[in-house]
Amino acid sequence: MHKDDKQFAIEAIKKKLVGKELSYREIFAIMDQISNKDLSPVLTTYFAAAGFKEGFSDEELYFLTKAMINTGPRLHFSGVVADKHSTGGVAGTRTTMILVPIVAAAGLKIPKTSTRAITSPSGTADTMEVIAPVTFTTSQITHIVNTVGGCIVWGGHVGLAPADDILIQVERPLGFESYDKVIVSVMAKKVASGANHVVIDLPVGPTMKIQHFKDAEVIAKKFAGLAKRFGLKMIFDINEMRQNAGRGIGPVLEARDVFQVLEQAPERPLALEAKALRLAGKLLTLCFADIPSKKSLNGEEVAREMLTSGKALKKMREIIKAQGGDPNVVSSKLTPGKEKFELKAPRHGIVSHINNQQISVICRILGNPTDKLAGIYMNRKLEETVDKGDILGTFYSSDKWRLKEAVETAKTMPIYQVD
Image (cartoon, rainbow, N blue to C red):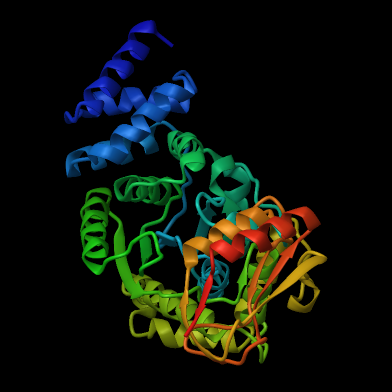
């Protein structure tokens, strides 16, 4: 590290703090210093805050993405390589763990690197870790994907776009992510993971990360612009979400939801299944268009066939085994924490509102994402009729004191509204 390089990066951060646009050289210097851990956490936070306040121009977004990719390792696969990402903010909607085995069972490569929770009770990596290890090197990931077609691993350990993971660490305590930062983060990870066909899930709702459709359209446009510059084929799914698609929130409860769908259990969460099939269908259609022998296939029909025939479940077991987990896992064995509390309806009426943000707060008090057995099971969903005393949701934790605190907090931060 040259003192001059560090000083150059600091001057660039100062420039961004006063709202000026940065060149590629300036952005590369900052990313290089961050990825090599040569910049103090305070200075890194200043850069994150500057981006959050001022935002980035389209050119800066391209430079940021490129610099993040160029300061870390990359995965390389041949042919059509699929991937999926959600802008998230929806607790208990674990579509990735259903989509990956569907896409891999359909004969495509899907190297899925996922994040741990930033603002939610559980990230895909946290949920997958309930059933298999998620920490691998780039060469191990390449081997797993080339052997079984797909993986679900923690991207943070791999070091793809390392500056991004350090920025995520400084953002986590503040619980903020700017839209621009999400776009850069996703694009850098997709390009670095070797993907060339990607579906982006953009959930919109009053308690989601993206609250307005017009914002989702702006984000999709920025994504599309970057995808074009990096040579990625990209499709979007802008969808309204007023509640979580699954019933479980927290690692073990979300893993149970996923397996109920893969097993096609009668009690499976149908909204989660429908969303996973829609995203998998769009992604398969996008990929099939570039495979001459599969051009005529309908992505959604293939996705449904992979799920209902049991091929996706079989593929998930192969992925779990390849990642060093127990391939014989079943939904009935995925049980939450011993300490529990049943939240009851205060009156007869209809569930009119579910607050996703307050669910995340309560789940974190219960111990998520660190306590894998903690979380909330949503016994009731929107528009359902309840009688006084019916169970709305069940809180779980491994720690009775955490459970007690969560129950107290829920009195002033209600997650359900019954009218």
